[in-house]
Amino acid sequence: MQATQIPDFDASAPANLAEDEPSGWRKPFSRVSLFWRTFFLIAILLIGSILAWLQTLRALEFEPRAVQTAQLLASQVNLSRAALVYADGIARISLIKTMKDEEGLRIVPREPGDTFESKDNDAFSRRVVAELGTRLGKGTVVASSMNGQPGLWVSFVIDGDDYWLQTDQAKFNPAGGTTWLIWLLVATVMSLAGAALIAGLINRPLKELSFAASRMREGNFSASQLDEHVNTSEIREVNIGFNRMAQKLAKVEQDRALMLAGISHDLRTPLARLRLETEMSVNNEEARAHMAADISQLDAIIDKFLDYARPDRVSLTPVVLGDVVDTCIYSMRKLPDVQVRVDMEDDLLVYADEVELGRVITNLLENARRYGKSVHTGIADIHISATAKDKWVLVKVRDHGIGVAPEQLYQLTQPFFRGEAARTAANGAGLGLAIVEKTMQRMGGTFHIANSSSGGLSANLRLQRATRF
Image 1: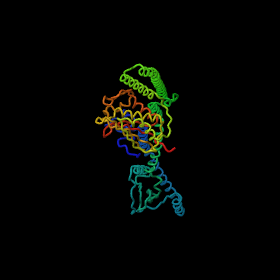
Image 2: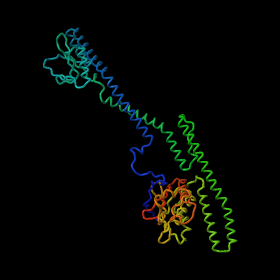
Image 3: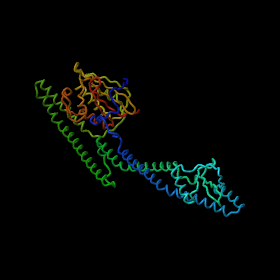
Image 4: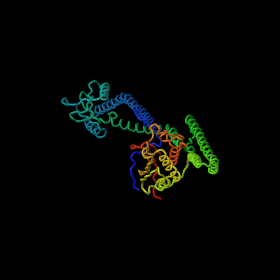
């Protein structure tokens, strides 16, 4: 056997077409989870608040800082003037040198030919200059450079002589853009971290509810219990209601399985008696054959009920897929109206319950034999193929019949549903494909049916790939 590709099987296809999402236009962000929506909304609110607060802080800080800067400059000028006025000539030279070395203050005479650049390039500087003019006099000049030497230069007068006082400009600059940017980034990161934490706490109960609903949808009612002792009263009430609903559904499912199993079991004894009485008391051979066929059909329907009512737990082990398929098709090879072709690797392993997987393949083969016969030859040409893809094994069981109306595809896996007359030539319980889907879910796989592009119905299975023993 050789592996081939399966052209019309999509590994990402859902197990049930009824769960497919409708196509068409979608609202923006319709696929964004509730966590991210909550996170983005909180983050936008926090960042907007930070920016508004930042602008407010800068506006409130502007005036006090300008006045404080002007006051410090005026104090330096006044102290320098007082120190020079009251120092004698020899001490004055030493004082000027000390002020330059220790305080970074430089005092030079102001010459008529000095060129300077006024410090009025921003609102803060203009406010400082105006405040200095009030404190030192209207003739005060504040420059950002003098004779090409950068710095903060302030003119003042000593005994009628003009001087320049140079000081470090960086001491009086307002907080620069870099400082505000760093502060903004830190605040933003902390706000986003807080938003993520809050969003996670808000959405955790909903996430747990979603997981529990998924488990309950798969039939695992015992693992669908939610915490009934949470602190939030609304979440506690929702959890209690969900648990009660899960318990009732579990009871309904248990009663249904028990009822189906009981009815099926109780019917076996009268059917056996009918078969025996038919064989012994009906003399007409043709009538006896028809009655025996009817009893066999009833017996087969009972088997379907028993299969559908089986428990939901199975033990998965590595199984050779080819061996299971060979066992299932063995009895069909001698039938005149069936042709089976198999195309897969000999040593392909899957995680499954061997008996359950055999029932799945048998149901699909029987479904294809009954309803997938060619309208020209009257023979059911069945093709079974499989290929490994990543962690999955994709199996396709395809017939070459007339297919199914697209609007009925999603209903074929519903219990007791029977398709149109063209595909219901034989009477049955309508449980075959429902059993396949339920069994595949129990084994952690998926089941998907579709019309093949070249005609016929294609049953696609996805099983977990297993490694060597």
